Image (cartoon, rainbow, N blue to C red):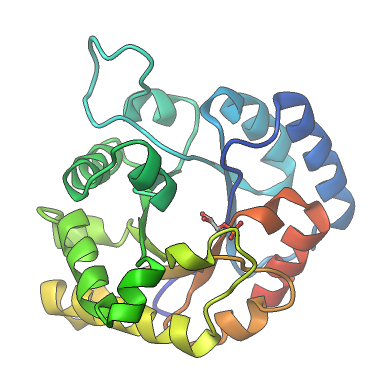
Length: 253
Ligand code: G3P
């Protein structure tokens, strides 16, 4: 563990208005632990990044984005570039969340382009990978995840890999209340590190933070985080509730 950071991240998805964001920060201020041994961040909808950055400043919570477009600038109506996010103080950007792959035509190719865009702008991508229930039941989880990891990291040099976080989110565990058992999740995360090792060698592989995501909550967080290759969490539902989010931060402490 001493080789890499523990990172607890919230993913608010399409929840929380700017007003609710401020209220959340006020609530959090009352219960946030003074010392944190993990890095903490919340990824918010793009329109609320500035509000969140201001509201979370005293809490030492970084603000992340939930998506980015891979082109630098130009005629892409409605899209947001990496430089625009960076300019707002964003440090982390979620790339390739399964919801974006499912509903917004995100592919391994666009995910890879976005990873490069985020790294080139000097930010840290949180790269999501995960298998469907059908894939798990057919026994192809390991191959599938290895493919997603390799595609996402294609062309990424070793010195930039340290800034990448991989989030393992089994699709069947997202928002379902169904968590992967700590062993199941731990095993896939160990395999992800093995894939990175095969590409970049052991020294780089042990420096990469690998998160688990999928119905992580105050009850299961400690057990999941105790797995040797799980270095943090990407939290959806429980990150919308200040007390639950703090409980998970405490579990990582
Ligand atoms: O990115 C986090 C996420 O997909 C997990 O969501 O609600 O199952 O914690 P949730």
